[in-house]
Image (cartoon, rainbow, N blue to C red; front, side, top):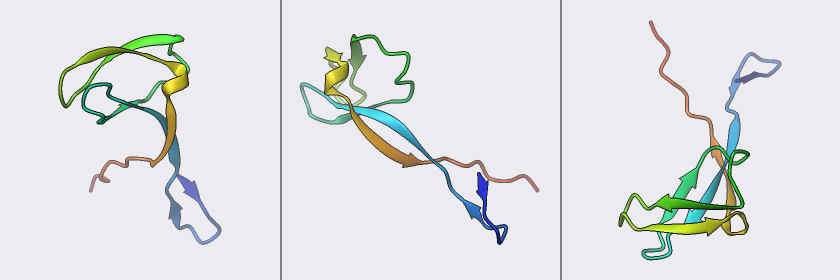
Length: 72
């Protein structure tokens, strides 16, 4: 979390990789992009079809950081 001059919280963003399922075309999100091989296999959470994907098929998506609720 970054703090500005006025002590207002600015949400950070992180990048994730997204590939489309070969069978149902629903997006499959990946968090750790640096640990991927050139070819990898994923299972779709929507239709449960497993397929091979390459790094060239990845699209980057910027997502705001998820924040936990503060404790009282």
